[in-house]
Image (cartoon, rainbow, N blue to C red; front, side, top):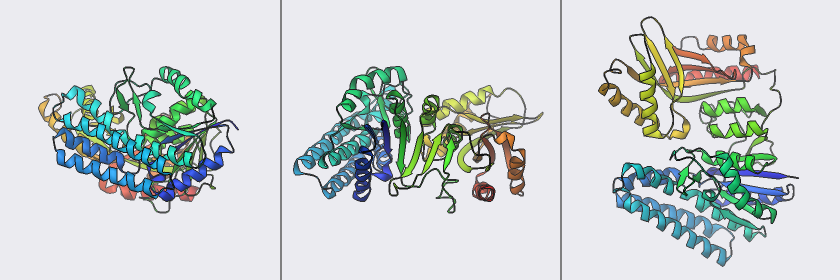
Amino acid sequence: MGTLVMKFGGSSIGTTTALTQVLSIVLHEREEWDRLVLVASALDGVTDALIEAAHLAQLGNQRGYRRIIANLRTRHLALIEELPLSTTERTAIQADIDRLLFDMLDVYQNMSQMAEANLQQAFDATIGVGEKLSARIIAALLRQNELRSVAIDSTSLLITDEVYGNASPNLALTKAQITENLLPILERGIIPVVTGFIGATKSGKPTTLGRGGSDYTASVLGVCINTNEIWIWTDVDGMMSADPREIPNARVIPALSYEEVAEMAYFGARILHARMIGPLREQRIPLRVKNVFKPQQSGTLIHNLPPERSRPIKAVTSIPGLALMTERSGVISPISALVDKTLFMTAHNQADVMISSQSSTRSLVCFLIPTSAGPDAVHTTRQTLEENLNENPETQAWTIQPVSIVTAISANLDEFPQAMANIVQVLGGIRIIAMAQGPSNCSLSLVVDTHNAEETLERIHQLVISTG
C-alpha cells in the first residue's frame, strides 16, 4: 500500500473521454494505495492562451484579452456540461469558473498601467488560473463517484523564491505548509487534487514554476510527504527514444536512471520538467511515466537501479540554442553575462553555457534555450541579444546564429568510446559546429546548423535502434 502521487497532464484531462479515463484510474488505484494525491495541469493549450491574454492586457488590448477569456470560459463550461455531474456540483463549478475569470479580468484591466516591477507578479497571478479550473473539475468528478475529494490551490502549499515566471520552491518552508495544510486531509482519507505549476512567496504573492511546472509540483509534494512513487500520466506510452512528432518510429524506453532522464529533460524531452528529477534522485523515489489511455501498460520506470549495459545509446533529443562567435580569442565573461541577463529578461530563465571553445583566433559560446522558456523564446532572445550586442563596445565583434543541439543519451557513455565514435561516423557530411560530452557522463551533444537538425536526429536515432 503506501502513498502514491499522480500528476495528470493537460492532454490527459482535456476531454470527457480523457476525464473518464482519469476517473477509472483513480478508482482502481484507490484500492491499491492507502493515500492518493493528484496534481492537475491546465487543460491542453490553456496556459498558452492565458500568456497571450496577459500580453494583450499589458498592451491595453481589452478586446483581445476579453475574447480569449470568453473562449476559455466557453470551453470549460462545455466540458462540465458533458460530464455526469449533479446539478449542485455543476452549479458550484460554474460559479468557481466565473469567479476565477472575473478576478483575472480585474487584474488584466490594470496591467497596462503597472510598473515593470509589478508586471511579472501580475502575469504569475493570472497564468496559473488554468490549473485552478481543472483541479476543481477533477475533484467534482471524483466526488460525484463517491470518492471524497477536494481541490487545493498550491499557493497554500508551495513556498517559493521571488523569481516570478520560473520560481524555485523552498523545501523546508514547503514541507511545513504541507504538514499543516495537506497531511490532515490525507489522514482523513480525502483525495486532494492539487494545482500544479503555481506556488507563492513567503508573503503570499503567487508565483509559477516555469512551463511544465506541474511535474515539478508533483516532485516536491512527493518528497515532502515521503511518497512511495510518483506517476506522470500523459498521452504517450512513456519516455521515448526520440520525440515521436519528429521521429515516427520512436519507441518506448522501459527503464531509465535518474541521471539519464534528467539529461533527456534538460536537452529537450518535453514529457518531464528538467528540475523535477533532482529531489526524487536525492530521496530515491521511483518515477513512472504512463499513458492515461493505456493504463495497463507499464510505461517507463525511472529509478536508481544500475543502468543496462546492453544498450549504449538509449535516446536522442533536440533542443534549440544560440551560438555566438567572434574572430578573436580572449575573455568571454562579458558575453556570458550579457546572454544570461538577456535570457532572464526575455524568458525568465538563467542561461546555461552549453559549450565554450577558443582557438588562437576565434571564440565560440553556445547556449541552449530551455523548453520551459516557451515557443517564442529563441526568436525573442535572439532579437534582444542582437540589439544588446550592438550597443556594447565590448561585444560588438560577436555575431549570433540560431543552432540546434542534438544529444545522445545513455548512462556511463564515457565507458563506450566506440558508441561515441559511431555517432560521429554516422554524421558524415553534416557540419558539426561543436561537440561536448556532459559531465554526468550520460550525454554527448552536437551543435549543428538548424537546417541539419532533422537529419542529425534521424541518423543518430537509427543508431539507437540498431544498438537496441
